[in-house]
Amino acid sequence: MSIILKNKFQADCMREAGKVVFHVHEALEKAIKPGITTKELDDICAQCLKEHGAISSFFGYEGSFGAGPYPGNACISLNEEVIHGLPGLRKLRSGDIVSIDVGAYKNGFHGDAARTYIVGDVLEEDKKLIRVTEESFFKGLEFVKPGKRLYEVSGAIQDYIQSNGFSVVRDYVGHGIGKALHESPEIPNYRPKDKGGGVRLVPGMTLAIEPMVNTGVYAVKVLDDLWTVVTKDGKNSAHYENTVLVTDGEPEILTML
Image (cartoon, rainbow, N blue to C red; front, side, top):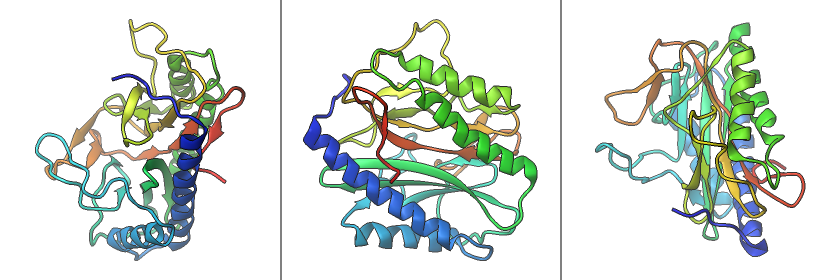
């Protein structure tokens, strides 16, 4: 599949979708507290999307390996859950960390961003995990410029994560984004072996860059629900993502205001 470059009108549409994602995360961050259920957080996501004239990019998304359509509006993953956690009756507890991935579809285009939040009092190691995951995104962002190679982004992310004693998930990667939630290119958060430098970045590319970082080993597995991805060793994981536009100069983060 070829990479789809966005013109000014299309980029403007993606800015609108990105703004919605930002506002949803604002609402979710305010609501996160011990005792709230992941279903209640999902309902907040749905309501906020509606208020901003958007729908969820994820609800009804067809999974692989017979998983069926995704049943939530946001992916809500607790502690050792890496991505694709299913909203339900599970209550947040003090000491948890919760990763929430939000996708908004508006005016024919998607915006996509994930954050990991703390719940109450958490371990210092988990605070560091969340901080390093976010910082690794910005280390990669330094290379999102015309003429740079994609795997320069990937390598910068990996190097920063591993230098801080954490590991990079290999089985799931970032992606291009636009009219489709998942477009080319795939964006690994590690430096692939024997694949050259990856595609050369050019203005008009829109990329969902999303480090997924584990406290322990990088290996993961999928639970019996065929959606939820967890760390293989049961240790905690964090997720940070933004939708980014490659410009003639510095990159523009479409999911931040």
